[in-house]
Image (cartoon, rainbow, N blue to C red; front, side, top):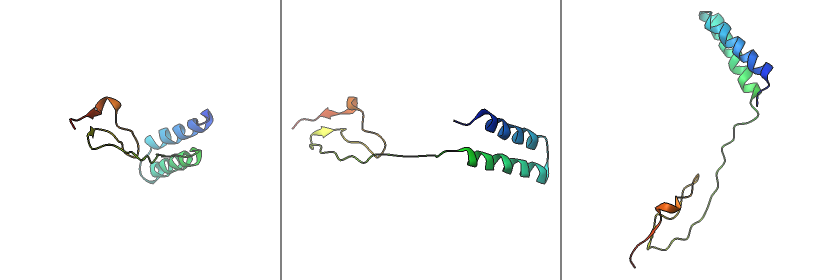
Length: 79
């Protein structure tokens, strides 16, 4: 969570840049962008790796790196 004073600093830089043109505006947008980079704690993407043993007559079992397939989509085929 960003501290309110930090957020206000970014907002002020963007508002100032919106009112300017050319290199002055670019400089203020860069200042706001650098502040955002400084404020972020981390941006994490994590996922699990699962192994599935699914019989050939089971349809819809398994998943991918982010999600397991919905249990409501699994069915048993004739075998």
